Image (cartoon, rainbow, N blue to C red; front, side, top):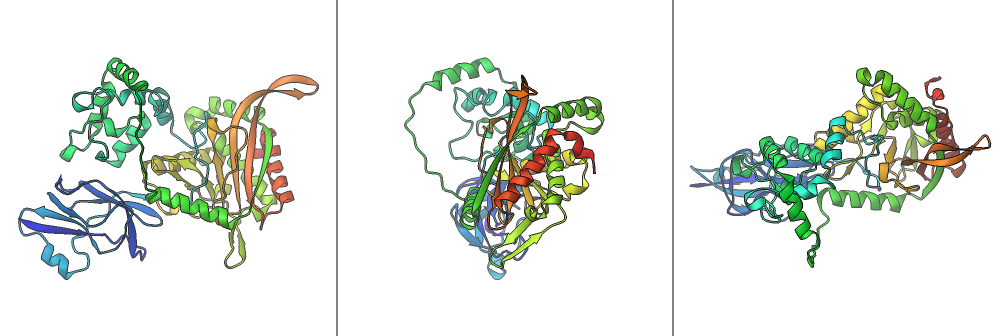
Length: 453
């Protein structure tokens, strides 16, 4: 028997140290080749580190939340044969594991985004349908109590705190189906959860699950947990703190009548949806912002407050806040000014799916010049979005509601939506901010203007 040492991989870009955010194994565990060992995070990415060999875990090289240098010892395995302990001592990082799935982290906005009935966050139709039938707040809670063996009677398929092993594709599918992987028994190598395991779990009868859920619904609960703020949550917290500390926010709220816009969207989807894809309200909002920014270029900008320089951009690189299983990310629609509404819709859906699957690149999650965010169906009537530093503006969308309004002296039902937007008051004057939102409002209330140059 020998000892195989796995060192902290060199992720590139001159990064000298990374944060250890999660262990997937513990001392004494047996591991197989390609099994995930740990998640580590840089300022821009979360990287999953797999095992290059079969073996048994002897020791872990750090604790969750610890910042470790590239090339330092990450984990020590007992393996058949000679191992690499001698070689590892002589070189900085030999036999480094191949870097696995990368999840790029963009500067997030403050509000936790949820998807509206108009699908403003860019979900695919299949994902939306799956969530409607078995969303995280619906059947999944009942299914969480179902299962066979140790997953029955509301008990999870593995001990509390043990991370379920699954590929990014399986994790994304479980998210779409509203299934918590903690409750799914795995039949793959080292207990890894496969697509077949998801199918078997989803096929289990719901009667036993419903009964078990009712039995525990009113059980007394006295537990408490202390959750370390590490990894992506720490990055989000730091980003929000930096944004609020640096930027004097000015929020402006305006009411918009989107009755005609929604009617147009419905007609376009009826005529062209099958060939060009379904339109959400988001690409129409994006087009309105692009046109309004032509008159207010100081809003499509980034402010380097340390250098005292505001950079205005002709290109509109539109950040779209998207909620993922890992946290809020902001994929960027590059050159939104050059896209028609269908091309914009396709790009938004692609980027949102990539962000949720953890396959979005760093370039796709950085470099935005202005951000569009939405609270969707749960958006209430007003919000105060936090600016995506170092940008100078963020446009926030609240939910659409039907209300009685007076039009031409008659009370009629209209679809109303609020825009709750924030601006950097050091760069954008209040009057210009209000005029910018009013310009967007005029375009949305007369949507034919979106197509007139």
